[in-house]
Amino acid sequence: MAVQPYGVIATFNTAPELYHAAEQVRDAGYRHWDCITPFPVHGLDKAMGLKRSIVPRISLAGGITGFITGMTMIWWTGAVDYPLIVGGKPLFSPMFAFPVSYELTILFTAFATIIGMFLVNGLPRHYHPVLKYDHIVRGMDDTFFIVIEARDPRFNLANTKAMLEKIGGAAVTELEP
Amino acid sequence: MISQATTAPVALPAESGDASAKKALTVGIVGIALTAIGLLVPGAGAKVVATSWLVGLTFWSAMAIGMLMLVMIHHIFDASWSTVIRRQFEHGLASFKWLLVLFIPLLITPWIAHGDLVWPWMNLDGEIHGGHTVGHDPLYLKKAGFLNKWAFVFGTIGFFLLWMWLSARLRKASFSQDSDGDLKWTFMSRKTAAFGIPIGALTLTAAAIYWVKSLEYHWFSTMYGVWFFANCARGALAIGILIMIWLWNRGDYKGVLNTNHFYSIGMLSFAFTVFWAYVTFSQYFLIWNANVPEETFWYNLRELNHDGSTNQWWYVGLVILFGHFVVPFLYLLSYKHKVVHSKIKPAALWILGVILIDVCYNVLPILKDAHGDARPFLTLNLLWVLTSVVGVGGVCVWSYLRSLPTAKLIPIRDPRIGESLTHHE
Image (cartoon, rainbow over all chains, first blue to last red; front, top):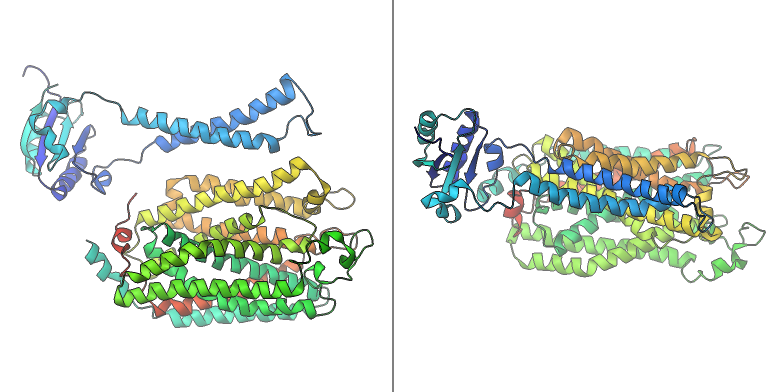
């Protein structure tokens, strides 16, 4: 064996076939693998054993940061750095700091969500080893694929190929790295 | 897949409906009777009981109005996911006529005693702060075209008739479509929604002003109708969640609802939590910032006694700030809390509880002691609020349960029903 391949790809003709195959790949304990489908298949995330995205947590962190930024900025500028009485109001009150903090909460949440999404989904990505596979364009048309990557700890070229064939995958092919 | 789901579970009849409807009615009548007994209890008095009755009516009317608005919003957006839930709200709309009946005692109070049993401006000879009477108060005279007994009574009856009319149209269209599947009913509902939403918005605002805001007619807030609407929507969504879980546990909704229906209604609850906070904070903030006595007195009454000491309503205000916004906001952020039945149910009950406290906060401080301070929140008076809420609530639940078996569980021939049954994120 010369070079370790990127992984193994198998072809499926229908969404249910892919769905049930995905369940078996999941149950076999693979972690670094993916499904390629021409359209979203509902419930596939569950069949693949995917957890919910961590993006909401990043959003929450962004929101908390925004709120604290707004409050401390107004407190620091108004009550510490340049104390100035305006309209007979206290130097600092969460009351008038709230609208700004609220806006910054939204702004920072939006930033964190967008940035977090790109960090997590790995986009933009201009190249991926599966693109070298001849039939991959049909993944945008009428064919479904499962790709298991070689970096998966359970990956074993012979066994993984055999398993993909056993669960109904056709044209099981090695992918160049 | 679609046909499978539409044929399987909707056929389940609601056998136990009759018994539980009767139970609800009994609870309602007991609540009403206990409230009536309050009229005779020394120390309570007609004013306290009538004001408590107003709290109960306002609370439950808000729920019905919220359901009406949500059904119309569903139609105007041609929404799909909420189709399976919409029917429950349509059953809830059956309560309007009974709410009007229960409102009658308050509609005759303008002609009992001096007329100011609940609303002080109804007694033109009533003395106000500074020794004037209402009838000589320029702030009243300028508003007298709106704030007079007849406008109040006909207004309230008119609002209810409009709500009943809109509800009747929506219910008829929805129920008729079950049998003939005609698309014209969908278009009829959409038209109802198109003119019904402005009607609903104006009437619920006017109702909030007449019933609650005019308790202190010197005060004004342009946010008031929106504040009321926010509570209406939140209450209706909370009740919707409770009904979904109840019918799920009973078996009716099994195979109809999926995780995403709970997720969607949970998100809507979350959105209206923020909306409520935005509106309520804006109202407070603008008054705090402008700091003019014509407006601040309303909050002062709810924070301080005449001697400057903090009163109980200050703490009630904090309960509303944290309980009505901060806690539900943080709680509903979580996906799990929205979709796991045992986690969203307490949130729905909690929201209903704080809406009631919010209504109390807006109504009850009109009950003042000899110094002109608001009587505390935690007194025996609260008992009559609770009996009123149970009384009116029992009748509303009864009217829902009575309507429930008269139509299919879900609108099976709605053009969006397939999409709704396969609702996904």
